[in-house]
Amino acid sequence: MTRGLSTLAVELFDAGAVRLGDIEAKLGRHTPIYFDLRVIVSHPRMMNAVSQQLLTLASNIEHDILCGVPYAALPFAAVMSVTGNTPMIMKRKETKLYATKKIIEGVYNRHQKCLVVEDVVTSGGSLLETVSTLRNEGLSVDHAVVVLDREQGGASVLKANGVNVHALFTMTDLVTILRNAERINDETVEIVSDHIKECQFGLKEPLQRITGDENGP
Ligand SMILES: O=c1ccn([C@@H]2O[C@H](COP(=O)(O)O)[C@@H](O)[C@H]2O)c(=O)[nH]1
Image (cartoon, rainbow, N blue to C red; front, side, top):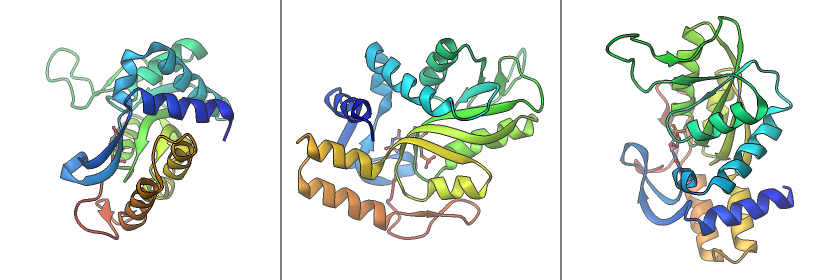
């Protein structure tokens, strides 16, 4: 972990990107920690810093085109595209119902190597949905760069589906940095680490929880 990444994690916390408590997340699941990168659109310097770090990860991965998972990762993909002069496409959440009737916006060719950009991986479901759409369009997708891997099984699910996840932070990295910077206490570290152990997602189709109760993130 570089000093730049640790500083960035603390800055993100100070900007309100880390929510603590009993938080309702995707599909009504509950989590004691929620990483909310959507706040970053109000902090252009941090938006640029996160995008630069993702670009560093991307520099070791062969790709022709970028695609952000809607919606939270779209700003990062856009900054990476402009800074790195790499074309970008956008996957819509739903197919447009009129005019072009497209699911993907932008210009691409079949067989191009597409690097997917995502904010957070929990079960891997959102990322996998985007990968599946891109592959249906003939694009080749083998890698994704993400800001946070919550270490709840999503990266393994993606690996089993042919997608290598490259993350700036794991949840363990994040809580360790925030503890060292005295932003959270030992009790919070323990609550988060217990939750991550208890709420794991597995490889069965459709994506399923393999441990813990019904309320994992
Ligand atoms: O701390 C979190 C956890 C999740 N998200 C959002 O959910 C999806 C990732 O969840 P999957 O189960 O892997 O689909 C991701 O797109 C995030 O936007 C979050 O923001 N913060």
